[in-house]
Length: 475
Ligand code: ATP
Ligand code: MG
Ligand code: MG
Ligand code: MG
Image 1 (tube, rainbow, N blue to C red):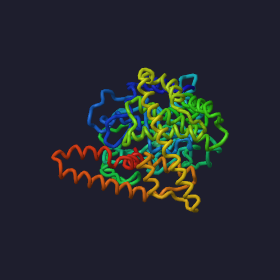
Image 2 (tube, rainbow, N blue to C red):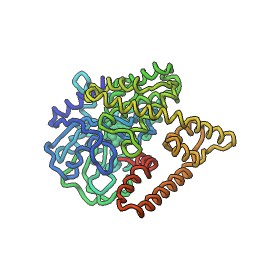
Image 3 (cartoon, rainbow, N blue to C red):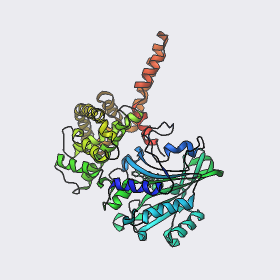
Image 4 (cartoon, protein in one colour):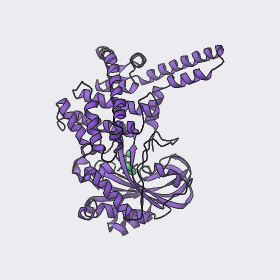
């Protein structure tokens, strides 16, 4: 079943059951805690938080999502993309646990000939928050499954909150057993064997404090209980397309095929190369979607995420053996697949292409200037019998050649080396201090200090902070 068909069936199922279909919001909603929309519920937050009255009691959407914290998983697990589409149904004080379980189970198990996904019940495992007896009873009632098929998981996995006081609640997931080649029997943490493809959040609690994922205070029940669910479109697609991972589905794999043609390398021949192929396909798609929504490459925040994605895509194509500009070859392939659901990619193509291609050009110059210096430094370290590139070198690469620290870290890892990150950080901090002192000195001479403040903000503590933002951003 094509991704487009999965999307259509999902929306049709919920529309026929009283849900208003709402188009995807931009990836760039204003939210103080998020760089990007990372779940289907984000555009509906004002309704869930009681700040606005929802114009409908039930809604369904297929929302574009970016999850940068998953970037290291891409290509290594079978299921994590930096960009993905989350199919969701939402109830604002309308149906609750039983309705959500019924609606999801029905769509998942209804035969394909009757408009469902036709997944085999005998390998499906609902999970609940350990102790959510209400949910356990409902799953048994709705599905007829035996007690031992309901998986009890700790709050770390199955309690949802926004990390701050406000709404919270237990979750239920639907897992599918993909068989022993993906992990051990009943090892629920082996996420690629018991693949979680749908998460149902039962928003019922009012939290007065949240200290961690498993340490929070429940002050009472919400006056209106809500449902927020998320089904990964790509995850269902690889289940229904008989593929082993999300990078091989209809809307992603063509980029891998094109990369094979460019590099002359085969996908499926060697693990390390396969990871690179998958990273390329993922990052090309996520970069294109980000540019489509208006992000341009930069040194901090959203722009830095885009820059990192584009550069990782380009570098991985190079590592596979193709040295010419890659994005003019790959981006149109991704556009042609994604354009069916997002026609604006075609309408806005000239701008999107121009932004991406310019960044690749700039990066090629950076690599040209810095790679030799990096190789010299790495060679020196190896000859001396050490295993760590000094912070000083990482700083010089950054300062003189524009190598972001994560690029140095990645290239070092490929060379079997480490980097003295602590030393690098220290030197960056000292440079910032010098810049501040400079600005203070100038402040003494000029009346208008705002200008310098602005310059400092723009050119001062940029990259490292951006990197930290990237790593700490989470749902
Ligand atoms: P996982 O445990 O596999 O990392 P999650 O628990 O972080 O997933 P949720 O936050 O519950 O995921 O999101 C709801 C659904 O969105 C998931 O059940 C999954 O189908 C999908 N999903 C989440 N993260 C990704 C991702 N990085 N790439 C593709 N699909 C994803
Ligand atoms: Mg996750
Ligand atoms: Mg999970
Ligand atoms: Mg989940």
